[in-house]
Image (cartoon, rainbow, N blue to C red; front, side, top):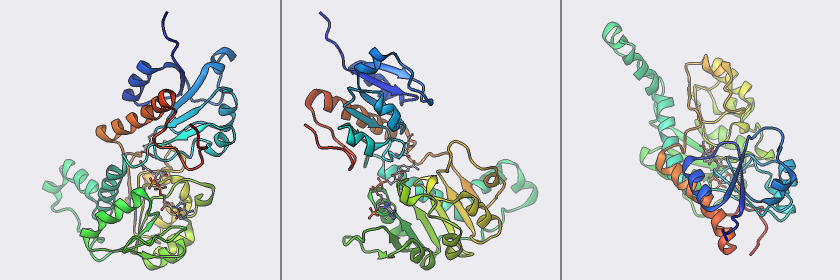
Length: 320
Ligand code: NAP
Ligand code: 8YV
């Protein structure tokens, strides 16, 4: 007699390595990540686990009467209703720490590309303009002598700060709770941070509290020499205010890896030559995404084999 495998739902896309491992360990049901979870009642009843790329709303959780665990691919789990899952006794896990170094490295790259306009300089060379027109224009901005403010100093923020130290910039930060274990200057509010620095790096989660907190006032406080870098979530930014600020030189430049309504990027940003734009790639290397994929699967396997999860989110109920 063949052993009955546990059923795991994958709504939408999934990393290929995670998919391969999930298919080996579980009975996998794949569906599109659209508005409706449209599966026969018999299948819905069988589903005990979910592996998702940040998409599990309350209505979907409610349709799965025997769900134990949602394993999210990504440290940010704003697309998973973890509070609602907790009320139903459903565990939510994410993929912290394994991506800290990659995201922090990318942030430094994006910061330098933004101030020194390196992607624009390469485009200039590739277009044959160096030979025809002479040297690329000097960049008005430099990283030298900057004062960098980190909005968020958690797992990734701290790695960004450590990488900034050798650049000899001043470092300040704002979080809701002051950290006693860091040598950086604490600002009690985002406005205080933006007023005191000339470079703002956002690495905070998408929550109702952080929605559009980087607004016209914050950007004005950053000032005309100001550089804004976002590697956290696009929902933290009032994008229209940012476009206005870049267009009218209220701030000097921005480097963005994340956007309000991905993958849609406002056309107003495409038109600006003081914006450096990346398609949400901060963790997107093969080794780092493989580590994230493994953690997604290991959380599910750990739960169903041993009733142990590796990386539950803070909202999740303690089970075992
Ligand atoms: P983390 O360890 O939980 O750190 C989050 C930081 O944000 C903490 O310092 C927290 O401090 C601060 N924070 C939260 N809410 C805040 C608020 N309302 N005001 C001010 N500070 C606030 O998370 P992490 O692992 O570093 O990841 C951070 C986020 O980065 C993720 O949630 C994800 O959205 C994003 N991310 C993006 C990429 C990418 O590809 N671009 C990759 C990975 C992660 P307090 O709690 O003291 O306020
Ligand atoms: C991933 C991320 O790009 O971990 C996160 O929160 O934003 C990124 O590492 C994303 O989760 C994969 O879709």
